[in-house]
Length: 149
Image 1 (tube, rainbow, N blue to C red):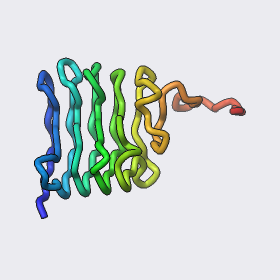
Image 2 (cartoon, rainbow, N blue to C red):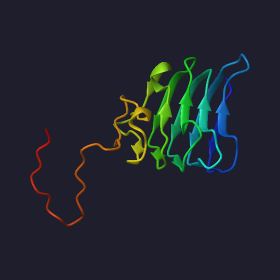
Image 3 (tube, helix red, strand yellow):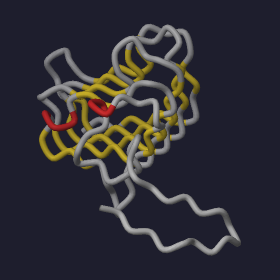
Image 4 (cartoon, helix red, strand yellow):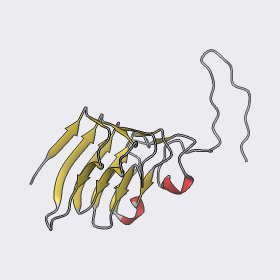
């Protein structure tokens, strides 16, 4: 078993921020957390293929990526992508093609800024989605009754 953790880094002006997998051998037990990815010049923030057991959490993705902020291939299993922040125009690609991918851990999903294309917000994600009907209430202000249809 190989276990790798990548944390507390900033990825700017690289071709791909982090690319995991490939080469005929599965990468196992990865943790990627507390990183920042700037899409300026980056093709993909995190590109994942041929991986077992991966946890991606508490990362921020800003600016516009050439492709997607996060991309999964069909050969992945047991992935967690949760509590990440997508502030640019790009989100997630291929989440439904991997086996046992969770976009909600303990009912915590990902945050997608309103500029993220809806096609790049996986349906299984329980986090706030762009252009969703949300009620934001300032502290100390009594919310008015709200009926959503």
